[in-house]
Amino acid sequence: MGKLLVILGIVVAGVGLLMMLGVPFGKLPGDLSWRRGNTSFHFPLATSIILSIILTLLLNFFLRR
Image 1 (cartoon, rainbow, N blue to C red):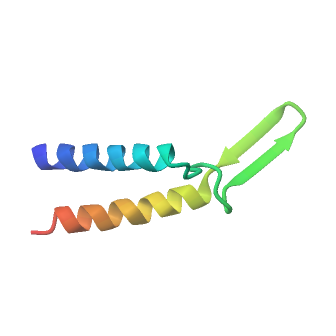
Image 2: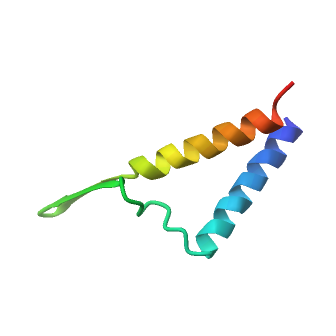
């Protein structure tokens, strides 16, 4: 459990660092947004795929037995 918390902390710190450097998470090409009248819908598809790939690689690297 401790190892997982350390990995999660590193990932959160890495994402925070990337956001401070100007990487536009949630505003990438491929993120879907619709606005009609008073209603808006935003689904960060590209951001979700990229974060999924990064987390999969990190967890496979650190949790390999």
